[in-house]
Image (cartoon, rainbow over all chains, first blue to last red; front, side):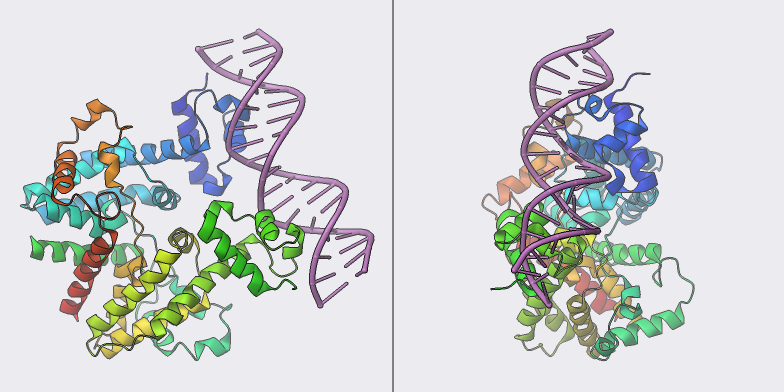
Length: 211
Length: 211
DNA sequence: ACCTGAACACCGTTCAAGT
DNA sequence: ACCTGAACACCGTTCAAGT
């Protein structure tokens, strides 16, 4: 079974799924394919090409998933549904958000996704100008993920000096209340899905009002 | 002049400012300090430690900048002002957003920043629960940046196949109209600052309504 | 206490050479 | 056309050794 760009990219996605982005090296990738590292260079230009490629693969999966849902009549429901469907794909590829963010992606699959999203908004009565602002406002949420950079566990994890906690009354107050109210949530104390939907709805509602 | 953790971190920030994150290697960093790479390990544990350290340095600059503005009486104005001030620091360190996003940061300076932000919202009448949702909704915008992952230039840059453009009617329509309406904007066609404020205001207004 | 040289295990990538 | 071995220039990091 010969190598091919497609096989290389699929193996790269599998490798990242199983061992994370850091494990995705040319040498390891080749090993996974039963070949030598140098053989990959016949099918891909360089490692950057592989990274661009797997972004495209994931975006392709998103378009595939999103293609199966028929859009709701109302723009907000349609966009919301579409984004939450896209989100499912990112939950399967937890390394993808980080990669999407560092790519100045011209991924054609991503463009296709955005095009459909713009279409839904236009059909909902948005001007092009407002759609444009909307995409910026949504940011990565338009694609279905939001990079969490605040880990609430950090607030009371062991490696925060005790004397510092005294200087963080608001944060500790907030975190202790949340820990109390919501003892069994998914990730740490925060229900990722619920928080994603909350943020998404705040923005969609705001956009609807501006429409 | 002997090395020190502080000197190492300051040199690391300078190096990233001038040549980007990719240029920040232990060897290059040592060279910049007129020392050998191995000497750094006496003052920092490993490279990850350096990265955590410069996040803390940048967050420290933010707290410094933000400390000079006296908060507006109204919560929304106060938070908005604070965030836009923080944003100035990120404009000086363009490599910082990418780093902040990949760190599961327990940076004490970041915690300090969040604590003050939570305080402003609490004073504005937010419940802890709503503050918590608000931080998730704001995401990186709370700190003053939003990672743009959609480069609108991509839509008509040369490397998008011509036949694909036909399949992207909504996107091309949007982009051509924007290019027409706003010929001289800052970055590509998008005014980063204006888009940041637009997205921020959508969220802050939405939160105010939920308050 | 602070710095360094030599060395190790790993990278991405080239290039000429194999089939 | 497709794959590879040897080699290069780079990483982060260790460890024993220097002052």
